[in-house]
Image (cartoon, rainbow over all chains, first blue to last red; front, side, top):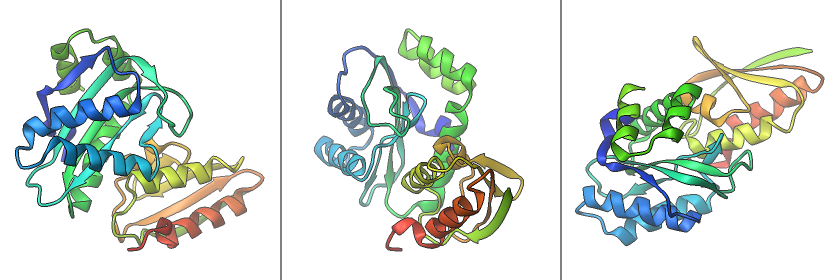
Length: 149
Length: 90
C-alpha cells in the first residue's frame, strides 16, 4: 500500500528533542498507539526494538525505516518523524539519521508490505523531496510535502 | 569483465528490508558494479533504497549483473545469498 494512504497528519511530525535510537522508537510507538487502540504502547515499542535487534533499519542517506509486525492487527499504520539533528543509528552507510519513516504492519501481509516499502523508497530516493523534508518547519508542511511527492 | 546470472527469489518475505540490506552489504564488498534487474526495472545493488523499489516478492525472477574485475565472484556470491533465502528459515 502506498505510504501516502497510510500516513495521517497526526503521525507526521517535525521533532527537536530526540537524541537516541531508543527515544525515537518510543516517540514512534506513542504516535502509532494512538491509531492502534488494540495494541499497547509497550507492545508496539517491543516490535520495533525486536526488528532493530536483527539489524539496523537505517537504509542510508540519513533515512531509517523502523518497522514492526503486530499480531492480529487489522491495519497498517505509518509514522514519519524528522528530527532536527541527525543521530547515530548504525545505518548501512554509517551516516547519522534524521528521517524516520516507520511502519507497523499486521503479520502475514508480505506482498502488501513489499509494495509499501517500495513506495517509501520511491519517495525518499528523490533528492529534491529530501531537501524539502529536511527544511520543513511545521508538521503540516511536512505532511504536505509527502502528499505532493 | 561482465557477467550475468538469473535466479528466483525463494524466501517467503521476498526482497524485504533486511534481505535488501544483506544484499547491499554483500555487493559493497566487491569492486565490480552490481545491478539487479527485474523485468523492466533496474537497481544498483549497493543501494537498499533502489533494491526496495523492485518490490521483488517470492517467485520473482531477477538477473544479477556485474561489471568489473571481481564480477564473477560478485555474481556467484549474490546468487548464492538469494538462493539460500538470505539465510531465512522460510
